[in-house]
Image (cartoon, rainbow, N blue to C red; front, top):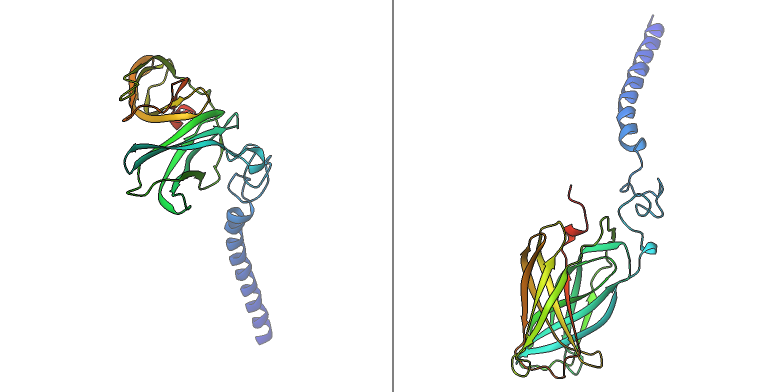
Length: 260
């Protein structure tokens, strides 16, 4: 009887162990082994061209994008010890955008000693040349020798899923160009969207294509099918006659991504 009882006990323990194993294995399978492919699983599956990027994934693989280009960087004196800096950027990616891309301006003296620096972040629109403007930058009694600009991180690119809205600039006029220059213009929003917090930069060039002045203003709101005045001012005359004016608005991110 003891031998038979031992066999029965072993049988019951085996059955109970099997049941426990099955109960534990089923959720483990569905949680860890039966996951549907997605863009966040760390595996190159679906039709991805890289790990969790390309194909149907929103994230763009590095091999499918080009780095933004820094066309030039300039610095201008606003007042003694106060300067503004501007970098002109080109995004060569026709259908890719990036948001909150961190950058830095750094001002050095003639001995390459850092005087001051300024950090910020910017939205990079698709297929565009646009300026990044910072100021005022305080240098105290030290004289700037050069300025540098760089992106602190590689942009995380995403696909632009709507056509880029175009704002129209018109009625440009200059006043007091030999004392305190002022540039006036109008911005028209011909799109069916209400826009807000639009940064607009003015770039002034001489006959040699050199940037001789820059400024920035912000439109808090620009309703659809409307026009708003903008103006830019400077504290001193320009160093050369004006040959070209670029007024460049940088639109908010929501203009390129459909609202849900």
